[in-house]
Image (cartoon, rainbow, N blue to C red; front, side, top):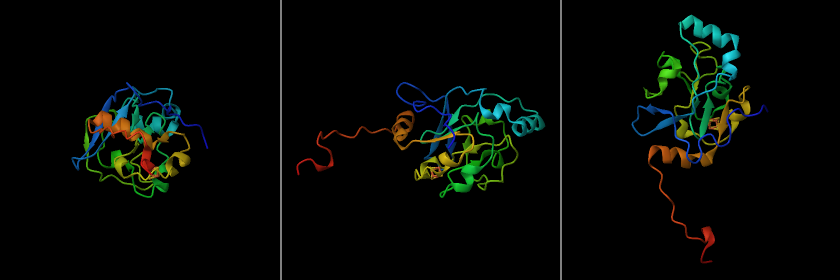
Length: 182
Ligand code: SF4
């Protein structure tokens, strides 16, 4: 397995998301973290660079999309390995729903109608968008499959997603754990 690109603490403590992408169901969203990294694999990948040129778009740093299912869009080279292994279709090719520059996904709402098969990318400037992050079963298959190490799966990051969303509820501490009183 290749090393993971996303650091373990990318969303922890005082880090605030730099944006979000909404799901049209009105209930779910995924956050975007960091300012991006122009050293990411996408910036030196010929297929990605050619696709941006074809669109007439400048390739700019994009950051990490998702919190429990975190995809570094600057390292995503649209290979689609995550699509082929995910049992619950967490990911969609964002450009097959909305063909807009990736940087403009910040603040956008997506229906989740984008294509979900490995080779259905619009082109190599497309990205794996964790539009159904909330459906992830934490099977870890995509993290293991990504050839760029661009995905980090971290169930415990749900707390940081909920804090960013304002839905975090502190569980009362009983001090005794599940077997207290026995
Ligand atoms: S961990 Fe498994 S269920 Fe979750 S996004 Fe990756 S492949 Fe899909």
